[in-house]
Length: 189
Image 1 (cartoon, rainbow, N blue to C red):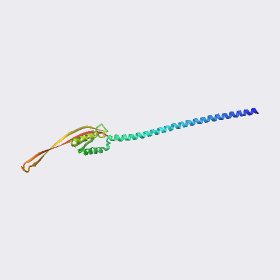
Image 2: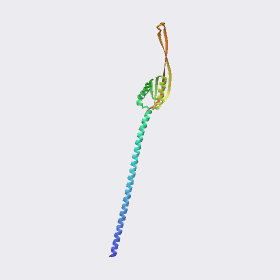
Image 3: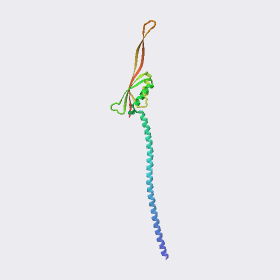
Image 4: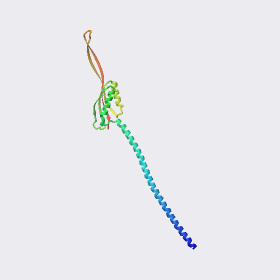
């Protein structure tokens, strides 16, 4: 009976040991599966976080591009707003005490992103050169193609009668002014 009991304890111990090993291997497999799942979730989470960081970077780049677009727009003339640029030119002339007239606005043949302006200016030499300098240094992408400055003198005769001698006295008044014609090209979009 002692032997039976010892065999019985041995069999139960072996069965319990097998159950423990089976439970142990089952738990190891569960842990491995959970670990794989957690790794996959972690990788997905990392991808999502990278995408979020990329989106933030992209949004910042879009804002920078918007600022750059505004800056570039300041250098170019929008073809739908040519009248605004013409008004700018005319106000530039009037604020510098010269008569500035835009004679023509053309698109050069074969060049779709350029506008050519022909202007005439009448006034004093310093004021005309000041306007030309302002145009050359304006924020627009502008290049002067030609500039002609001429001095115009007008002689006017004034006849007066001397009350004492009753003779006609002719005096000549010379009036000089400056006239300029300019042709320049501005980039447009």
